[in-house]
Length: 218
Image 1 (spheres, rainbow, N blue to C red):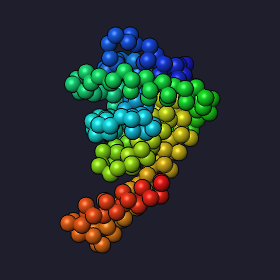
Image 2 (image 1 turned 30 degrees about the vertical axis):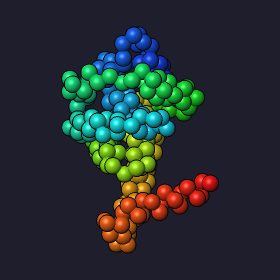
Image 3 (image 1 turned 90 degrees about the vertical axis):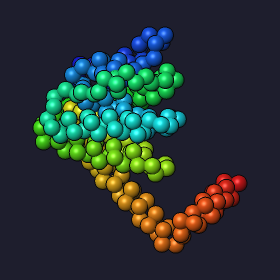
């Protein structure tokens, strides 16, 4: 395993003085040789974990696409626009997502270790970058309750790159196929909806769905 454990890296990010907000620039300065991996982890966290973080899927998804293309182009260190680096993350959100992730990795990081090092090769970076780009696009799509799956794929890719774990990278590939199938299913159901209901009836459909869910929960 790498010299610095992932949970330690995350706790270091939280150790920043509380009188100033944590920014993406702070994270960028601390990633060190973990570069792409830790940035993918942090930028996918608001959508990957069950924390209330509305409004972050689109801007973070765009940044993930920027990082994905850099991976595909073979860059060895990440780059982000200066304006993005100045983006502040609310303290409550930062402590919730980074603290929760640090506790999670504190329990499971003994399972993560350097193995099947294909993910560290140029071809591996290209494939994983391609997956990050695809999952980022899916994460941005305005489909309620579906951005968790692609964000989790990016999260797993971040783990694999941070610890050079090819097994986790293979798990990310499998998860990406599952996430793509999920979105294909949602699009198929939406097409069925369009066949059955006109756009003028969409409000009636929303009310019916709301009443149906309410009856099941009552």
